[in-house]
Figure 1 (cartoon, rainbow, N blue to C red):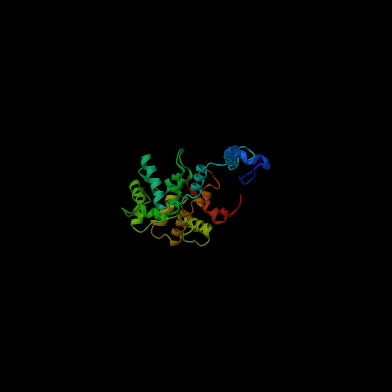
Figure 2 (figure 1 turned 120 degrees about the horizontal axis):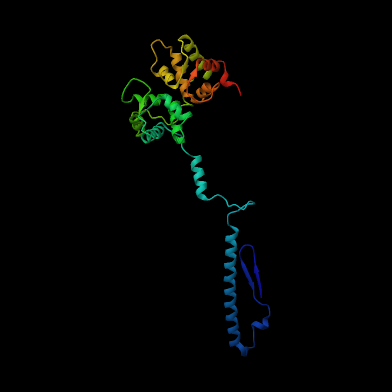
Length: 281
């Protein structure tokens, strides 16, 4: 008897070629029938056994590749988590307000202004969740949204937003009023002639003319949304443009002194107006 096992999981069994063993004389028909029945039963059992062995071998061959290092491929749960992380949606005004409102409630913070948002974004206290810093930066990048949040119940543009204001925005207040904003304003902000250097130049000239020694996010916000009488519109636009680019303002105010205190001197604006921010270190 020959048993052939091929790679495609087929089992071929050749019956013995000795015709004499299979056929007896006409007088031995009972013995021949018993032999053939036993033979067929044995072949069936053997075929089932070989098919089972081949099935187990197939399972082993399809196991995850451990590679040369002997470590298994990442589990599906890990891959799904990584995919979720990579596909995380961009922050919106509503989600940013929600993150800030939750933080304020948890830490008994009653109000936030642009200076405090800047500190949360660039110099947060130990243990501050990264999403809170991201939300604070988002508010700086979207001063129009922050202005609508802080003035929705009380007019005045004082730059102070209470926890109730952020609660309102987190619950869809801006959406209900038709002022929803779905993403950071970097791509949609109004252009300023000369870019960041031009904005720094306009602010530097204004500061020299009015003997102003420094600017912070708070004072920039006031220049943009509640400027003193006689303030040129170009200066207000420059202040708003600077708010919308907090990373640039951070580099401007820390180029000579590290610390991210949010205080930029007139000399810092002079430096940026002369192309300092475009220089490679």
